[in-house]
Image (cartoon, rainbow over all chains, first blue to last red; front, side):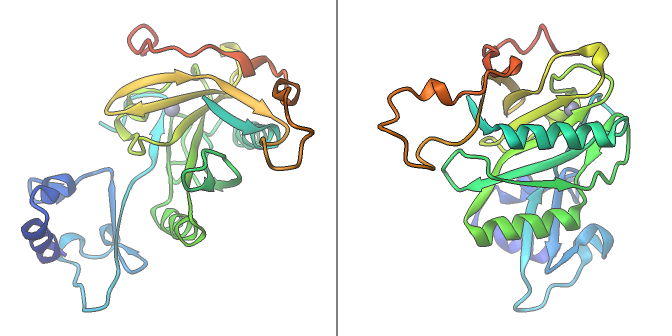
Length: 69
Length: 172
Ligand SMILES: [Zn+2]
């Protein structure tokens, strides 16, 4: 997955910082390889095969306070 | 302004009251670009908390794929506040990633009173908007020339709330 993001950065400069910081995926972003959230696989080390579908969605969260920071 | 069917408002309030004191959450899908909330999808709150909500990432993927396949988008993203006012919290603002969505908050603690409220949240700026509750959307059924659309407005107490652009005075 890390390589995919590096390749995207070459094609779309600036995309990397929208997706990650300090070598980690932003906290409120979900990245899926096929049906699986990479958080529950091997995160950015999750392997991606030709033909796999990658989906990036902003996490939907909130509440009545400020616990998430 | 958010224009929304009364049955959808009732469903959100019902869900919030059922889940009280836990926060509830969900999304209402509508045809892309049409600005009409149509299909209410209650979401699981994986935070299962009285002061937090979070969509289940896997469930969200399924629902977002469904919307994409149907040519829909998330028109409304809603959640309840079970012991605070219906105003976006710091967390709500931090996480609001859909600049086109209407963020609806349902208060369930009578001590804070009031009805549902709707907000646009873009780049950390909160703008409240009026909610117009209707029995049906204009043009859905043939109306006799529809010259008097106000007759289709449900005079609910929260349907005439005025818009506010004040983001500081109400922040908590
Ligand atoms: Zn909230």
